[in-house]
Length: 193
Length: 93
Image (cartoon, rainbow over the protein chains, first blue to last red):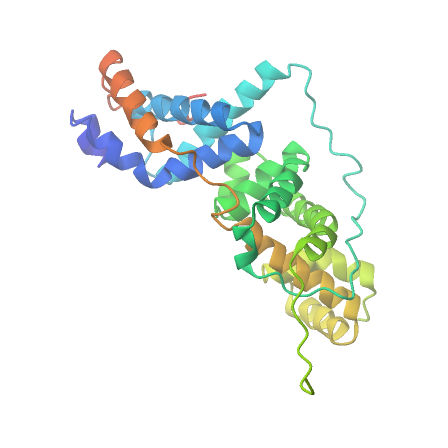
């Protein structure tokens, strides 16, 4: 389809990007935490992709290329908003002590129907340091593999693994106690009643 | 090798991604068999990853797709059509 677009059938670009509309928006939102800005960045990213389509190399996945554009666009917007933003990763070598709950019980996906549960997760993601959040979003939400994530972010595979592990542990530490408190308690069934 | 809880926490991601060496994985599993806390850490992490990746957590704004394609249509009229230029490798920034 890309060849068709480059040959002049530019309308096909609309169909080309349809499967990636959500991914690009999500990438922008995870950095900016603002729906209107994320939407604007997503639009800009798609326009840049159209403009630069001739430079896309078929050796890489189109989705990876597109996500990289969205990431650059969102980072640039973030820098304009917060020029002094430095994303320090505190204590990069220390281990994160997870929440230790002996009463953990599975939280079913149906609980996400509740706004409160969705907000808890969004807030926990937003609280991750940017460098960890980028890796987490690419790996867990965008389902990029470790190599693609490393290439998109310009970091090593080892860094991807380390940041992903720490992001997961931070989320577990923050979210596990909150989710278990917020999740509806299952009714106990007493067989003798 | 006998692992303590802190070692196991360091291996949680590798365990979930199935990237641990077979002997390390066996050591972690041996620990999990008798450690209620580490089992809960593993289960809760796995559960949280499933919840986080659920599409309902981040929903697209109403009308997002329509606005996107309308803006694209407008932009595509204003900028020259893309041409094949394979010299550059980097995505446009």
